[in-house]
Length: 297
Image (cartoon, rainbow, N blue to C red):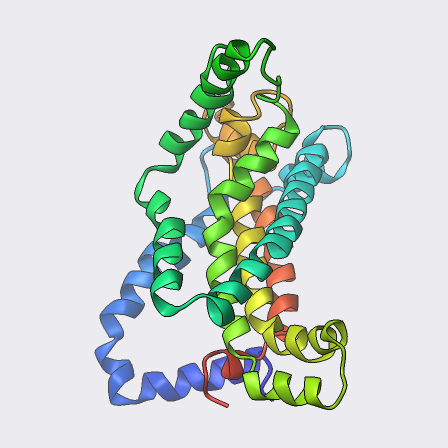
């Protein structure tokens, strides 16, 4: 079983770059460097600049990070809101998507599974903000739900602009990113192995716990990782559906770069958030058998 390791990835990249295919991919490396690596270095440079200045790489100061860690601001509340919401939504989607994935892989036929996949993918063709504002029209006062409830003789629930509504919007937005990796993981479990376990007297729950879930775990972990990273870095759901009920860290970063015009502070917040998510990502990759998930074992 091959686990993720930085050394293995480094050696694989070195071997690929030295090959003919690696040389042909040189324009791709240049594009990734200019579009991904360079902006990260710019953010890192601004994070050590003098507060409220635009002099990246020409000055050095730790004041931006000191302000984050000294506890005098409410920024840690934003960090906690972002991580807690992302973890909660990830857990909910894992519980919801696993049985759906099992049904699509083992119960439904290929045509039905394809139709269900299209239903989950189709909303992605519409802008996320447009879909979220659609929720405003549905759950808002005098909206669709409230109008239906009034026809039935009672008022609709007042759930808009609450943390619960923000979590619901996150779950709705990132459900496909959890579902499809879980489907890949469930598809890795051999049906013959499950049948053999049942023939040997294993209960359905024990078979699932000791055979099905461990073998499907690489796909589940990738789905959880994707969902957590995307949900932690989201901002539209909290601003559109949550209003001012909660402030997530991405909102603080946006305010620092725009209204406050404090780019160094916003860059420092972005660096800390990247380090937190990056550490969790590396830890998750150590638990994932990438070769098996890609069918190379």
